[in-house]
Image (cartoon, rainbow, N blue to C red; front, side):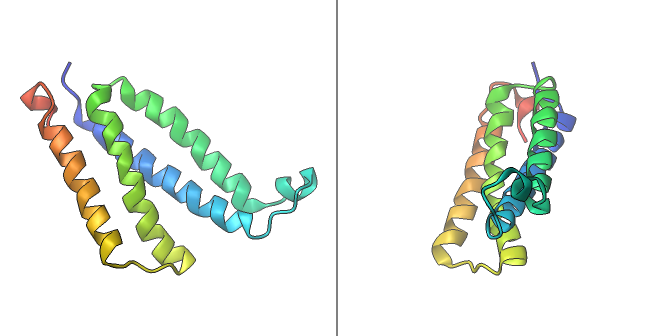
Length: 123
């Protein structure tokens, strides 16, 4: 079964959603109080949980359009998204080793895509 372009794009979009969820959870954790009312009133936590739920639904839908061996490695782009989002929204910095890691992740995803059985399944 050839992996369809829409499923690849949906997985990429899903990784952006779940990476955004991670940023929201990190922001929510800074003001976390460990009681039910505190958790339920923490907008960052609620937003992060909501984005994770949407991401879970979308990933299930995307798996209908192709091979898991091609689609699942694309989830590694979450590491790339989180790096960029953490710079923008958390004020974190990137060093040479982090950039090398991002380049390695992207190269690995591309390699897996091109290494799939069917030529049409390649990215």
